[in-house]
Amino acid sequence: MIFIYREYKSNRLSHALKVIFQQVLQVPFKEVDLTEFDAIKGEPKINYSSKTSTDCLSIAPHPLLFENDIRIQDLLVEWQDNIPYFFRTSKNSNFPFDLFAAAFFMTSRYEEYLSTSLDKHNRFTAENSVAFQNNFLELPVVHLWAQELKAALLKTNPKYSFPTLEYKYLNSFDIDSAYAFKGKGFARISGGFLKALLQGNTSEIKKRIHYFLSQKDPYDTYEVIRKIQKKYPTKNAYFFLLGDRAQFDKNLSPRSRTLQKLIQSLQKNNLIGIHPSYQSHSKKEKIGIEKTRLEKITNKTIERSRQHFLKLDFPTTYENLISNAVKEDFTMGFASQIGFRAGICAAYPFFNLHENKERPLWIHPFQIMDGTLNHYLRLSPEQAISKIEKIVAQTKAVNGTFVSLWHNSSLSEQGEWKDWTEVYKKLVKIAQK
Image (cartoon, rainbow, N blue to C red):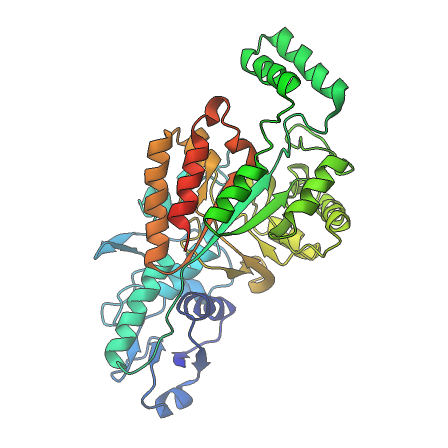
């Protein structure tokens, strides 16, 4: 048990301690008053206060964890031993930075509540983040801070036994378009062909002619996924888009037997979740409708989710999911850059800064997306593999959970995705436990 003395109770502090000790270091902790703290002997203790103490580890608090509002924070990122820190406090404490406040800032996504600079899909961009602007987006900083804290605690309590942590891997897919042509009917396929002719879209014309002649759908890559999963045993999760057809929501109809059969076949040995539509971001009632559709198809309660287009607005998106009985979300990652959006590669509970309290939703961050590597960063397959290796190595080094995000369509080997099946194979092989 780790004992922490704090002068004042705070929901923010309790949440930060829970993330650091329970989710990252996986050790029990207890917040105590000064009388109980002074009476504890022979156990790891942290004095998180302005008071001086000589018989334990001391960390001077930054005001952030004892505030109730949301305000612009004066951040100065400094590097020590290749680790970035901010929220400098007192040089008299064992840590000149408040790592609890820093961890809270990162995992609560504090900066995203204040940002007004959004992309064309109204998303907070990676490029606007403190992590990207200070060159630590590709570092799991919350884990690195926790490791430094663990090392300091072991100096004062060398006999204390921390648990051995275990690296994990979750391979996930967003099924935005289950099939390019299959299940769409002759009229819809022919209409698309005529449109491609009128527009002079050569690649689309070739794609449709190939389908007419071979009846092989380019997005039907599920057998490829199964074979790779069998060769490199992984836990796979699939998130299905079941929204009504719209500009950015173009999957098969939820009533399609073709789509329903696919979902039912994939749910047998994998995790299943809803992929709330682009429209659902502004019309929260659609989340419940789409989730119910998936529950009817699977005959199971659906509690996992990942937002289509990674649309994430704090705290609205998560509160909408909570109101629709979603318990786990997998949206925490950037579209335009790879890395650790919240500085963490472990599941942790959502904290609503507007309500200033922890909420019943678990956040599962991801680190790598196929579209990021190809569309945004415009990497070659070889360059993409190199990036993947670095992120996986960072995650393994802290015994975190690596989560990859891929799409069935990215394994089509057509157009811009030529040679990317090999990238996916290498990713699974590298990331496999």
